[in-house]
Image (cartoon, rainbow, N blue to C red):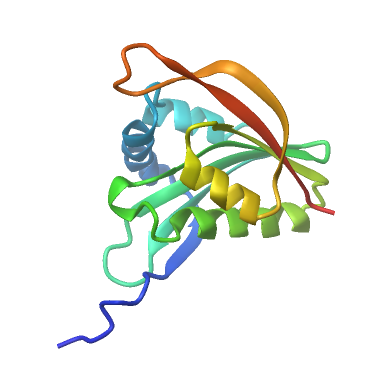
Length: 163
């Protein structure tokens, strides 16, 4: 019998492979009402300065449990999307992906990292604030809410100084 069931899982972060895109599309669909399909993700992956980093649970099943898609251009980087499989939310996947992204972007000498997040996404906002992001803008009615009868939520534009 294993007595380490109480430990948080450990995640390995690595570059996405072509065969991951279908699973990444499923993960994205579970978190966003206007999700991208595998073809769209593959198209974004080949754009100059783009990175897709995938979180996999260490040991056992090595399928993706989350991913972050970023672009770095001219010193300014942007999180285009970050998503976690529903079964792995609040398990440290998002933090592992963000920590990796920040390290890699600093290695690439990016100056700033931007992202947009729904003003209603409290777990993500908490994470981003803990990482040192600050709000630098707001976009009214930017996100269409899932199962909310067409209601929208504003997007907060956040920035992290990477220097």
